[in-house]
Image (cartoon, rainbow over all chains, first blue to last red; front, side, top):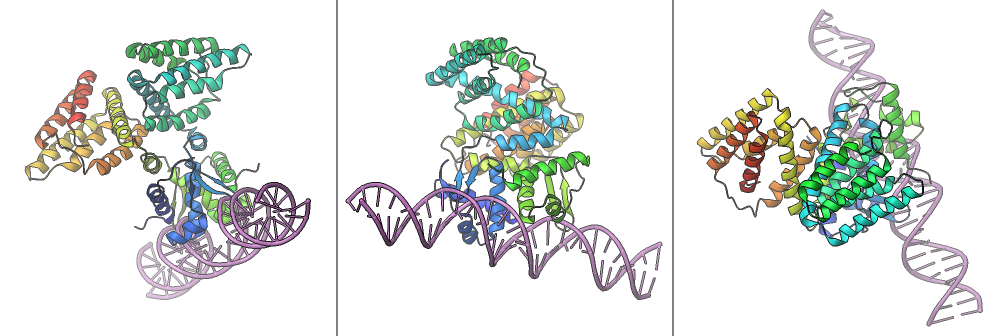
Length: 218
Length: 218
DNA sequence: ACTTTATAGTGGTCAGACCACTATAGAGCC
DNA sequence: GGCTCTATAGTGGTCTGACCACTATAAAGT
């Protein structure tokens, strides 16, 4: 059975990225050029590009072109969340998988974290305090803290798998989340995790993180 | 700034699914009907559908229509893997991430494995012996064994994240793999892992699996 | 009632038109 | 020569239409 044209185009685009050594920010050939080059219709090219766009792998800008993007997984998480909301099992899988990834990333981080990353995490905690002092919930800092933890694993794939999972968790759970954790507890827990990571105390950081993930809003 | 038409269509499709209480297996309105209903071009509808299709949320069949599907996430994992694994540290990240996933999946399996899955794993081991007795390397069985382990976690997402990692590993490492494991050791190790899993001895199964993954060809 | 044929409807792909926007090149002015 | 403005080329965005291959359905024939 012949595979659909847009799937073949995805593969070809991947090849082009590989052969031309394209990086995030670099520009892909135009739709018309791709169509000509691959001997397909422009509509088919567009179908493929829309798929990639939803994965946040590319961004297309009118008048400029199509650019490779470092994936944030935001759009896909939103779409998945909307489609998954009614499937209890899938939600469990996402939450569970996200926790697994994060915990194992932090385990790796105990060996690999760089001083600059520790500094960054510390700064995020300080920013949390500052935000909270101003009377605002430090939601962004909460996210950034967790992201920085996973980043400290020095395993980019884990980070890229983790991101859409977290985005999904945020969207999927936002209307039903029971907040078990006040903001000051959250910041305290971040601080505790950070201190354990600084000491590279694997057992303690895992324990504290697991505890925190049980209490966390996402 | 006006959002792209295809993103609006995604939202409308979601609404239709919700209002019509559509479930996996149910059919969406035709492309032409959607285009008319939403007052957009058919091409735009197709762009939206391709996005959903890549997420495995729908399946479109020529002559029949477009159906809601229970997502397996296979295609997306494949595409994401292909796009992420170009980077410098990709190989290490893949191998490491795959191990993490597999080990954690097996940890879950110790609580969750079903008798039918144990039976399946046992059958795969028997098939390995049979294949090897015939003088052939039991490569397929090796893969199937690992897949069945991850499957036993009852976390479909883990399985779907694991698959492309393994596929990549097979392709990327195949020319440089140093085979540290003879086939009979491999089968013995599979057997040992299986026995520990049957006993639901988490510590032992993790230990044996880690050992095996160090020796394994993929 | 069953089989065959014709028709309607489905998705799949491509070409083409035209629009809004951006980038680039060229002309004109100081 | 440098700067500004204008024109043109190129980009994506969206829609329409044509035609194909396949499936579903209805009607006709046995």
